[in-house]
Length: 414
Image (tube, rainbow, N blue to C red; front, side, top):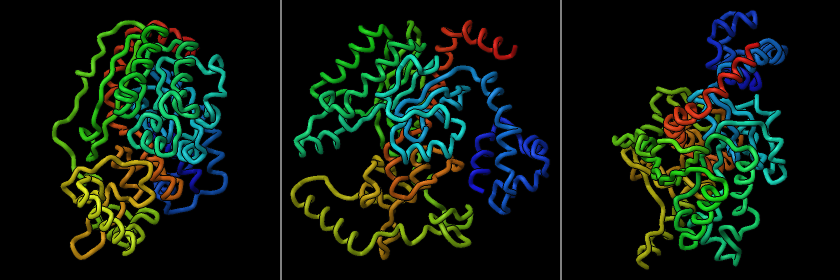
């Protein structure tokens, strides 16, 4: 059942319901019931979809796509969603975490044959040609939390971190070999100031002087699009000089608040999995903090307030904007706790609310445990930010590659 729904999700946007139903020899009513999970599709349905529709969709995608991109350190596909929204087609993916791969493939099952694990073991020459390289390379070596933790453990950070910091050079290795028209790199804000600016100077030197790209960078707060303060540095590079400018981004000034992403709990949305229950789709009790955990967090906050520190939990209501969602949210949820009133203990966000907080659509499939989901969304990107960057990048990239793209489309159509 789940496999059929995933396949239909993959084809959404390429075919309408009538076309899908006709190709499968069923009524549109039956198709809607399959998609909603109201009826069980027959055992042959998944194979029928793969045989009758997936090959056609693949050829159609190759002909209809405006540009090709690779998705490195892909996580669960937030940057991919953003560039697909502007006509891009992913031709290669790399993500080493097996749980993230599970979520990625649940939402992009057509990527099974192009998904690689450890990027350090991939021969750059074997990666398909592409127009744009996308990479949210690991940020822990450069983040404030990551540096503090590594210092406490006596471990190296930044480029001295052999397991994560040097992965930037794998990005550079692929750019050097494949020479894409453009790239977009994403990392934490602290990358600019890490090691008194030396880390970022090395990155700029590699991209500009050694690889010869024209780069522009900016720290953008996701709060323009979602009710979450999440500042990330975005580095855009073009092989040739363009008029690309971050000033062209449309960053909404009317900030969204938590009521835009919280479950309404009034029956206006359908219950989902174990996140919400009952006719009014109330948030399940499992997300309310236990008495012991709530007492501990309050005592911890009081202790640090007395010492003049700002550490403590973050309590939000419908009109709030949250702190940054982190990968450690699964531990106690302390950075974003939802108030349930003065007489009730607060609760964690549900994974679906975390998805919304990162700008993912409700159609995004979450096939993993809550713990893994919290880690994945905490490590992901604010998708609408990336979608807006893609909007501004695309015409500049197309100006540089239009002759090549036209030739490719002619060959595909032949």
